[in-house]
Amino acid sequence: MKTISRISQFREWRKGISGSVGFVPTMGALHDGHLSLVRKSNEVCKHTVVSIYVNPQQFAAGEDLEHYPRPLEKDLDKLDCFTVDGVFLPNNDNMYPEGFSTKVYEEHLSKVLEGNSRPSFFQGVTTVVAKLFNIVQPSHAFFGEKDAQQLAIIKKMVTELNYPIEIISCPLIREENGLAMSSRNAYLSDDEKKVAAHIYLALQEGKNQLHSGVRDPQIIRNSISKQISAQPLLKIDYVSVADANHLSEITESISGDILVSVAVFLGKTRLIDNFSYSPSSNK
Ligand code: PAF
Image (tube, rainbow, N blue to C red; front, side, top):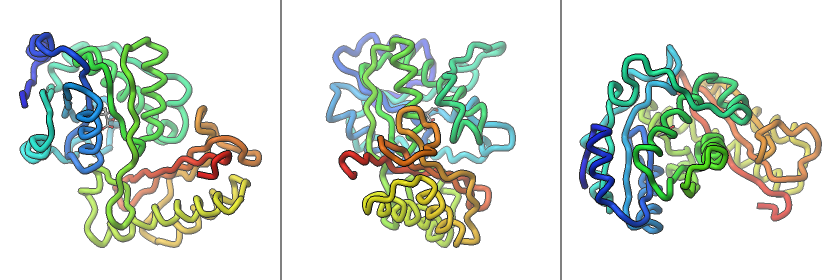
């Protein structure tokens, strides 16, 4: 497993790799969700490259950039259990040299949900992912459904900017109590993790209602909101029932595929979770 920090060195190393290259971009603090992407890449591709880079451009002032966990040695040990050809570990000077001013942004899907609460977030994500794609030149890239909106935006970017890359989405991975795995769970105490699991339970309740035939999106939103609000430590940012393709809020009866998603604060920690639902298959 080769670790490389400099873009020029990575490019040289990449020239020696042929055949399919699966890419798993991460910000480190790797958990089983990330590792499931690496596993999938190992299944699908001849080679696998992982990047670990805490991208400052996707953090707004006052967010957790300084405190974001960076357990590099542990991350590399975890990756050692898989077939990882290269780990790209760029630094800020290399990625964003003095005077850097070129941005990549998607104009529609990026404005709602996470984009509404974190206005410059997706511009930071699409800019860094576009740069990483140009450097790594993968044939496939793997993203988790935990960040469903990010996944939709990356898929759109790849189509619209003609990247010759297949985006492979991988299922959200949960802790035993249902809490969606996230590097930010490291901020939570064991007691807080128990409280945070109620986010999953609330979503499950919404899903059960959909399975039993409820089609009024507001009933689903209200039910999820009520369950989350019953936990005094949880503060809702949004509860959304949106069209799966455009991510716009559903106002009429649910008839097509939807994304049900939430963002919730537990203290200063912001947690997101979601599920997709299709009325045609009732799944
Ligand atoms: O999902 C993440 O961890 C990040 O948004 C990504 C895709 C690695 C870009 O920094």
